[in-house]
Length: 355
Ligand SMILES: *Cc1c(COP(=O)(O)O)cnc(C)c1O
Image (cartoon, rainbow, N blue to C red; front, side, top):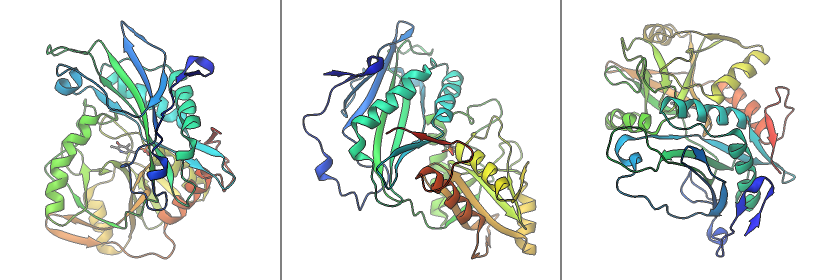
């Protein structure tokens, strides 16, 4: 057992799985790196974090995560540059957002040092797991859940924070066909839509299955009250380009404050692209599709960076988007990934060196 600075103990695996992994053919999030960071909260305080071999977790059937769903997570990536340097993209934003989610779910906030130093230690131990193949990265999943026991419906008295990692290949989702949702909602005013809570995803699966049965890939979420406003694209923020203006909805109770979303707004402005943060109506998008001013729609999130939409359905009618040679989606994706992989200059100071 080694002890790192800041008291993070490291227990290395005796049987690395790295030789069994084909780094040229990685899918998303299905093979896991050798180690994980674990930190337990009990008796009102966080204990010392440790890096241990990736392994199953033992929980009692009465653990509150199973009954009352206190579970939150983050999604981020580590990128390796051509010289072998290892980088994160705006990691403090993930750290802050984890605690915003924790507060809303009545879970304890995690000290910043545990998140940042735990992540750095884990990445150092598992650095061989960060792929160097173009477009690949190590997907990082920090998460926290109620490990305390009891059937009484109240917040748990114990929690676990874990960071697990999965080497992942380039994310070629292809263009997606989406359905604008008229009945179901992923979030409501006063609810937990702005938190990265596991339950938000559970609630999305059924309406998404219905859309898939109708031949769509994904759902465009509208506001829960009127279903007249466009809010998110699946588990991504959404951008709509009408003529040459890039529009995204303002964040609120129902919309997650995505790091990719806000980075795109800054980069677009830097490129001289006109941006608007305002409510977008379904009617406006349909009119723009009809008169030809609707140029692009895309989702924005860490996994794909941008996910271009080829067509959308609404009230049994499909509307196609044009194929553009020079899309904002491609330009913005290149600018962001150049920063992430240490290929371009980083005028906003978003890159964070780990190794
Ligand atoms: C995670 C997530 C996003 C994207 O956030 P990023 O910080 O850009 O990865 C957008 N919407 C929802 C609902 C999410 O869960």
